[in-house]
Image 1 (cartoon, helix red, strand yellow):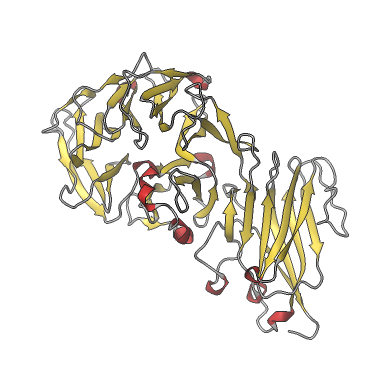
Image 2 (cartoon, rainbow, N blue to C red):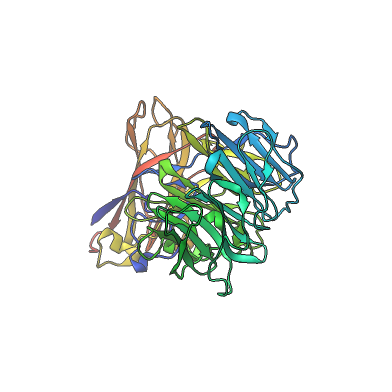
Length: 510
């Protein structure tokens, strides 16, 4: 008998399921540099283009934070901090970083700068020692008498807010109304469960409240009157779900997303937070636990993607992996990129357009425009997608001699987009019986020439038409089979729309 299944391989990366647990057929057991932000498609991600070095020399400094100011005149200005003890700005992304430091800040290499826009066209800049403000003119200036050592800034309801100050790590402070230089650090302060043995690890602005994360809990702060000179606030412990890193918190159209050091959570500001990282929970165990506070994140609006950058693998000291979660489809879909992203930010190139940028985690001083090219700087991007392990039941074969299950054909539908080479193939029986890989070539405006994957069929590319590539097999027996697609060539993308796998059993076996 013969049968086949057609799949999209767009179900996302999963390391917790397997064929015995009924893993969906569209799941991926490896999804390195695979972009799942396009429903129904599996694409090789785009890469990084070099952004100008802010210091003029390579290998000297580390960018420790990325922010963006919106001036009172409506102009967007990127701002960064460094372990050089400097703050920099860039006008209209013109390629030149301008030093806006008030002084040489005592910023250690392991410290982070945190930024937040506030009233009056200012951005607050905090590194745990200095609290600065900047409005796009001249140099940054010191905030007058803020809570000493505050780490996390925020602007909401016309007040400036600061959290996790020295010796008061569980307190939230607020300024006078519309005045970031007026603080009363003995009265205008709100304790957030100060005796629970943890500290504030992040704050964010919600629809109707300020949300405060601690190591093991989430709290809400609500303004309960309309008095700007004598405001009163209500505090509420919401859930026993914490956060490990302020920069892991992102507000999205689907709710807040953050990382607690073990799981990634999604919260709609109403119901109990939902874990969205079950598929990759085992993989997350390889994040270096002693460095989880380095986690940083980004929300990519045009793809509905949450990006989380972490130090991954034994001995890692710097962020070297970005987990990418695509929301808004049937279920969260994960992949991962091998970006060394120490920090990430969306910077505007105009009043209406913004793009993702990352700062290198290493001491190079470089920032990069992300998803901008088919290269990571001058290097090829190696993209690998692997399916689940298929068994007979995936092909609706219930009674059979496992040794008699044979691969009949693999058929791909790919997009005709530019010139590229990729390889498609399979692995057998969890690596015990090897596998095979075959090239598939697409050349814009013509045939898929030179491809040994094409057998017995004239397959024409050209224009915007899809292309079908197929190969038939003999004598490939298996109990379990996993599809593999990969591409490690420079300047060559690929887009897979569907893959069909045909199998057969030997004559007389049902």
